[in-house]
Amino acid sequence: DEEEGEEEEEDDEEEGDEGYFYGGEGKDSTKPKRRSAAAALADLAEKHRLRRRTLMQHSSLLELLELPSLMDACVRSSLYDDALSIAGFANTLERRHLMDNDSAKLQYQTQQMSQDVTHSAIKTNEKPQNRGDVVAGVVSEIRRREADLRRQLIHRLRGDVTMPQCLELVTALRRLNGVELERRGNTKTASGVNKTSAGGDPNDLEGVHAAMEMRLQVDFLEARDAWLESGITRVGSAAAAVSSLGEKHKLGRSGSAGGDSSGASAQAEQILDGIERYRTRCFEIVTQFLAIFRGSFAVTSSSSSNNDYSFSLLSMWTARRIQTFLTTLNSNIVTHVHDTATLRDALDAASFFASSMGRVGADFQSLLAPIFEPRLTEMVVGHWKDGLNAMMETLKTCRDAGVAAPLIGTETSSASDGADGTNPNDDVEMQSLRTPSPPRILLALPPLARFLNAYLTGLNELRRCLLPGAFPSIRAAQIKLVNDTKMVLQANERAVLTPGLRGEAAKLRGVASKMKLEFDSSVGSYMDNCLEVAFGSADYAMAAAEKVRKLEEQKAAALAAEQ
Image (cartoon, rainbow, N blue to C red; front, top):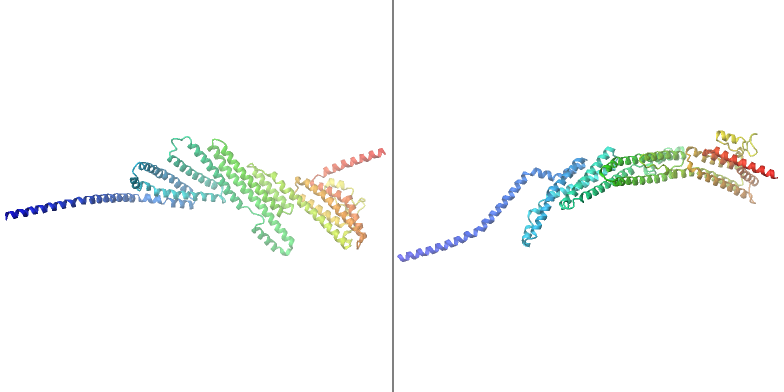
């Protein structure tokens, strides 16, 4: 029994040893589990700590995320100072967070390149790469709002703004350029250029600043140019046509002449209004440009190159606007001005515009003469051509019909008249009154009298608007008119002398010969005298005629002495 008890105890000990062995192996297997649980717990604690810190900074983060919306509201409400302050704060955020994170990230990636490929693949998924994503997004949104702010400021310059408002807008654009320069400086500093080449960066930024200032001037002139174009009243527009049509419809019962005169007056008023509006706006733009940009270059630039660029830019813009004005004025005058009264008013308005621009060094009065002088000549010559065409039509009609009654009038003459129907006191009268009286013999020749009336009507246009530069062309036109009239009268005389002329052939031939003779003897010289009186040079003409007369008398005396 004792032996059996000892064996049972040995068996129990073996079983206990085995149980202890298996129990020890189970405890060793729980150690990795305990370590993973501890790491998970530490990770959760770290995340909880981060969340608590984030919750403590909730108000600050909310303000940061609301910066783009706040800047957008400032831009929409025209609070430009506040919007520019937010843009400057975006540069501060970029310099404090994004620039440092980029350098840290670059250093971090450099260290990882020396390690194993598997370890580098694991490490690249850590937090430093995504550390500034929120700030970068906020800064990017603010940059987009800066572009919107610039567009709105330039759009405001396209409207009717006063000098203080214009100065405020340009100041805001300059501050926006300053924000851009600050960002460029931050970028260069973060890239490591500031230490090794510190002497080159200021010059580079100065060049960028000069380019931005030049671009600002170009944007300013383009915007103000759009405002200038929007305010110009264009002749022949739909509104002017409707207005003219309404006037003609209202006065339709009074006849077509009244409607035409009202339409012409409306167009004349439109031309004058366009010139005045162009003058005020153009002069205002030049004044604003000089007041805003002229003083800045003398302070910010060490040389006068930028100043020269600004004045060259203004000079090119002014020359282009003046050329556009002259082209438009020329087309409007040729198309819509048909009397010298309107031409004189337009000339006065354009001359005042040119003299006003002379205060800023852009006087263009010398460019007005090539526009107004040809138009004045066309108006005068137009009356002359109408008179000549009417006489030609009358002669042709009477010749074809064989009727001489319309060509013959009642001749009235006094004892004081000469043999040719002229008054011998015409020279004294012309010298005293400067208005020579027409030959009374023309009352017996109605076609020639009507032609002379048309000629005097053309000269009367010069009493409203007299331009000395048009004298040579008018003189040449008068010489051509006299020659054409002589040719018409000669052709009429040859036509009535043709055999087989029906009707009152004898009377037609007598009238044709008489008209030709009267024109050669009295009408031609009378036309010359009237032209000199209209030009205001009657005294010079009389002196020249007196010289010619004395020369002829001397020649006649010399011939008589020889005989």
